Amino acid sequence: MSSFFRTTDPRRKPGAPASRIKGLSIYQPAHLGTDTNGDHVTVPLMYSNMLLAGVPGSGKSVALNNIVAHAALCTDAELVLIDGKLVELLPWAPVADKFVGNNVHQALRTLRGVQSVMDDRYDLLARSGRRKITKADGLKAVVVVIDELAYFSVTVGTKETKEEFINLVRDLVARGRAAGIIVIAATQRPSADIIPTSLRDLFSYRLAFRCTTDSSSDIILGNGWASEGHSAKRIAAEELGVGLLLTEGGLPRRIKTAYLSDRDIQRLVTKAAYIRTNTRTTPDDGGEAA
Image (cartoon, rainbow, N blue to C red):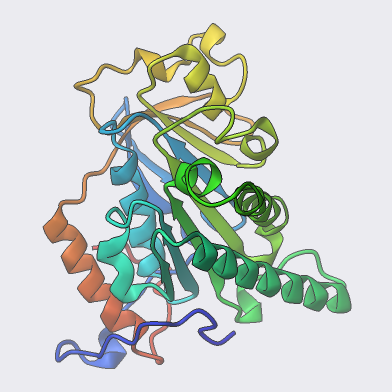
């Protein structure tokens, strides 16, 4: 698949020879941080979707940067960034295949484009009698990162644009996994009108940062977890970057996300630019983001 969403073309700067530049693969798990035992916590992005939410300043953006960093360093993934706040994801714009700011109509056009790619891939799978794309197909995953979900779903635009936005996101989350469409959505307003149950339950991974109420925590993780002792309300205000990670079929797991400073992000963007402008680069299956 060609760079369907490419809108930026960062020029390759002097540095390591092209043959020595190594990237990651979207089929490798992304590093998030550590758990209470000090063990590394990773999440597989391929064939997965992820929802992140919590009050402002709780660490949601830090976790989001870890995921975007991994995708940016993957040579077999295209990066689509939709940033309602226009500041959280902006540092990654130079290496995004498509960057959308706080323009709801541009966001809708972009999501429709991803939906069209998804439909084309399902046609391909149907003709070949297969159920999902694999690494051998040579098709790039499309990683769609949305921050802030509430901006497009309840704040700006008309009733029609808000409904279309949620319907497009729901469709991509519901059908996209087998086609290599990965949706990462984040919001600082965990409420039922922003994250309806029909959408939340489609996310295979959910990460809840500090919330003000048990019900807000349940809106992210799922109904009933707070009553079983798993509530993001119990995360103290000073515990920045601490959240509850829920995986398919598992229990919420308390983790602390790895921190990326502005300088770290600048270094990663520079490295990703090298990788993404080098067509001869192949993923390094054993590598780690640096």
